[in-house]
Length: 316
Length: 309
Image 1 (spheres, rainbow over the protein chains, first blue to last red):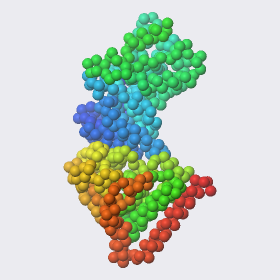
Image 2: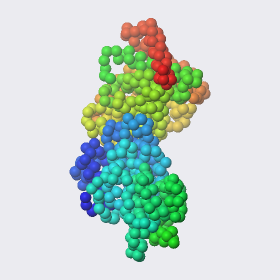
Image 3: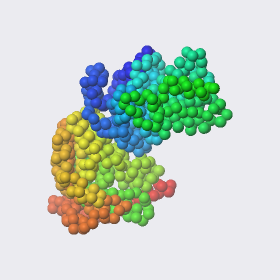
Image 4: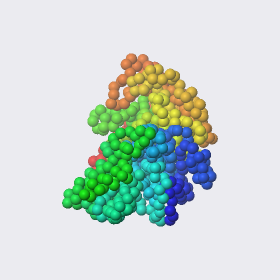
């Protein structure tokens, strides 16, 4: 298609979705006067709707509109605010399809930008995805590239159950080619290698790619196989297992604390493979089990340097 | 469901069916024949029945806990309701949702929420879709007065008022939050004053008078279609227990129950029908016998479905 930044890929996904789907509306704060001004000029305030800070009702209303066959994108200012509308996400949106025996669908996308490294403090720098990991029927997208940002968004609007779209602002300027075709939520191999497999999503996947590039510069070309998950729920088991088997060494990186989320889950999932598949036991690098101070979040989170060091250790 | 000949009788009959059906369900539960918790609407049946009979084709309703009459008045048969309650293989929703939230979306009965107030936002979303579609439909939701404490009520009123959504909120204001009388948990009994500043048209309604509710709901429907959401504050009293899992939780309530029995909506509607020469004591007796038989028949049918007979 074309090369876009991650930021513009999300914007294009919104625009293309609005063009393709006449029964799609967007709800959020400061949309028509600020963040989606251009889109509002094209589609009008009938379909792009400003509210004040009523996130719980915004999500609940999206579910109600979905009952009448509408698709809705709820624009939440940043991921931490998922706590404000947790009830509506879990009880109203995620359960609708189940509770009605599939007679009602809920193609609602809740856009939750991760707002780290911008001085928001501990109530504005959470990822928040792992909070929702045990909610059946809830899709969770965590794109790590422009291509994933575009296609995961498009894919989410085609699903019968809601999607949390965790878009990471810290990688907004990363540019990449947008594929011509939707890979329907499949994980992507973004770096091909044969000595160690890194499995990650979002910013962590971008870190893994940077680590692979750094190792290549240092002479270890083709060392790292990187799996960018795209959707962290449901998971693309086939790609995960294939990439794990390929190298026999697995490192999973998660940009949140380690208690729950895709990292510990995939670590358990890998136990389904025969022990002989692995040269070493799969490992996890995660965020610290602490809140992140506003003055500097980086010491508590995975980094390229940390990943490179861990890879070198595991390849010894 | 527009005004048509026989509306008077349907107001009476649907309230009767609701009461007898709930009594039967409680009996069956206590006899161990089913496990459903029932939230009896005894004394409040007029609200759900009167409001739903005022709706029209394409309108949607989200029931609350004590609104079995909404399903009855929206035309969901007792067999269909029992299928959900008893987990018949023919249950349309597969008996997944709690029986008071059972839904028949294609017929306008939408799923509610156990999260008090959460369903009001969904009703607002239905109203938004209706406004976008411009077909002159309205979205109605029921809730108890305890919902005044829920943030979703305010958020929904805030948005619905701003956007002029075709939304009708119907409060069953019975003055009790389970075992707690309203003065312990809020400042004033009437709730309409809370809704007006959000842009809602409001009306206080005699929640035990089926005609008052029906006419208020017709007005509400027209007002909502015309571009202003409506809040109906239906003052009533819960004559039954909080649910079939509890005995009476309101000590010293006997006198109040006796007083409100005089205002019982079934008695009042029967009195109105007699006064207007439209029915006799015999008619009521026959209706009661017929409906009790129909309820037993529905129960037998669903048991047979479950047993695969």
